[in-house]
Image 1 (cartoon, one colour):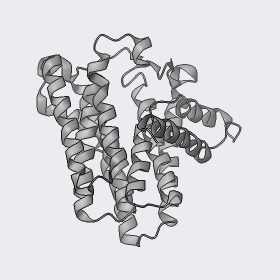
Image 2 (cartoon, rainbow, N blue to C red):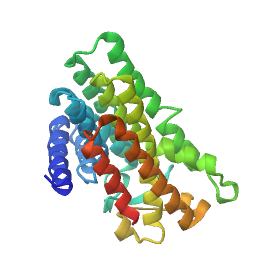
Image 3 (cartoon, rainbow, N blue to C red):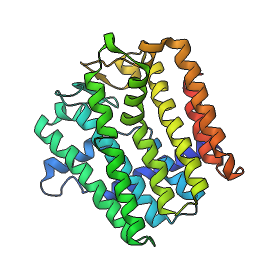
Length: 292
């Protein structure tokens, strides 16, 4: 199967998995559940759940455990987009080619829908862990991972730094911190969580963490490069608050060079799998093609 076919087939599978793990739009209270579905069903590349499924496949994970994990990660991602778009954050007007959730419904419903998506994700993770063969301590590690990657030292920290950034105080280390947390955190989670569930050996776990760290940062730099000068119609999103990017700080040429280095490092980290991590390698190349 070609990578393009694999990507299309897996994305279709992810849509079905998400549909199974979301309440219907008629579930009471319907407005809340319709808002949750509005944001999730807006689509997207679904790279994070696809990554999760690819790692599970590589490590021989059971579908009944890995699939709910993939759903949970995408619900968390959608939650972050809903919250980022609120007027008190990035004041988003459009997301994935549709009006932002708070404009289609209202701010209060958007906030509650974001919280509900996050809580549903944790519920799904708990369900997956209960069906796994992990011992209590190992299962606790997975829950801890979710909290640390998403919390005040992870994704939420990245958004806080994003809100505080101003052009006159741009710094490479701060920019890397912001990108590695705000965007990279979910790539890290999508790779490490299934690895822990599959009880991957330490060598494999370390290699996957290097892969995720480099891939996540590369993905965000690719976004920065693609959005430079792109219209809202081309990017599928628009907001009233524009944060500075890697391109603003380093220029297009240096950003492209760093991007290429990150993609190469991500792919090289997979050498420990002796060619078995084909889909992960292809995913890194796919991201690499976004700016070439």
